[in-house]
Image (cartoon, rainbow, N blue to C red; front, side, top):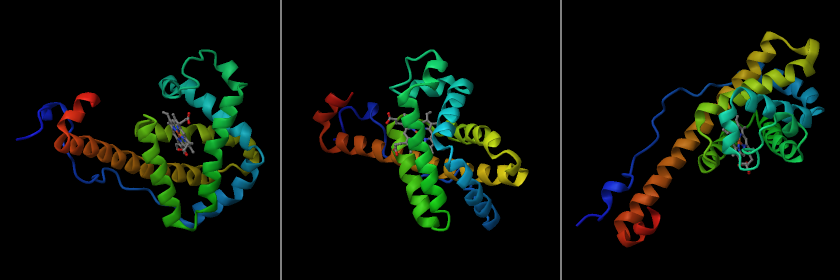
Length: 197
Ligand code: HEM
């Protein structure tokens, strides 16, 4: 006898299929990122704020995912909010850690994979991840002034493409885990499912 409500519960699914190849960084990319990070780091809070306001301006739907910001209509007010500064810094410190781990690929990729998993729980889907990279690049360009070159832009873009690809993998893995957990509960304790749906 199967689960009484199996028609309503997600079916267990297998491994994440690699839909798009993960983009990798060259030695030159890594060098350019490390060099320019030193200047970006001096403006870390400012970049975090500009990046977030830019993300919310260009993709207002991203704001809805944030419990703290979803009801704030006025982006100018957000620009000066302590919460946005704090959250911007959390992301910037993640980028800082990524830069520090550029030569430890396994550690770097595991950290990004875990971040992707947590973004499934935050309800933040992969189609938006690269927008953060675009806004980061827009924010750092004026700060880097004459240091900004096409090669520097390509290097940072590649890092964000790498992050977006692995975050997506983590997100999809977590989605499968959660669905399997629900499907297993359904098989083993059908009566419990009445509380889930
Ligand atoms: C390259 C892209 C991104 C990076 C590097 C990034 C990084 C982070 C980091 C470091 C945190 C702190 C918590 C943790 O470590 O799990 C976080 C939290 C979060 N992120 Fe992202 N993120 C990205 C894209 C996005 C996008 C596009 C959205 C929305 C559509 C989003 C929504 C969230 C939410 C809702 C939280 C939790 C906020 C809270 O604690 O209240 N993230 N992110």
